[in-house]
Image (cartoon, rainbow, N blue to C red):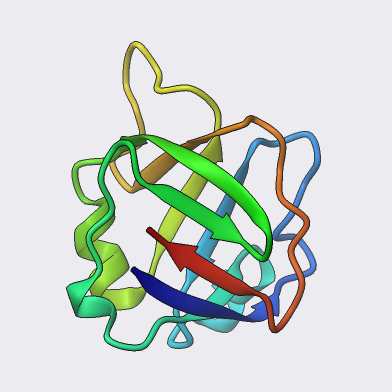
Length: 117
């Protein structure tokens, strides 16, 4: 289990019409910060997310349905991942994404813990 902390939420990061939220580490550029949630994960190099795991945003728990082919690699290196709140797609899943259910966006706040189980 690894825990991260939300450090910043960009003004365009959350759109109720989109079922995805982009996370980046603290090295994100100003442009990326506008559209992203900035997180810090101590020892992120050891983080591996698999189908069937859980990710908890504060006290809101989600089930991992699918992990994109490069999602763990970029999560470990630049703490970047796109969380998609939807079932695993039949075709063309995003390679940098982790698909989660339920399909409702979590309520995020600065300082909130993100737990990767």
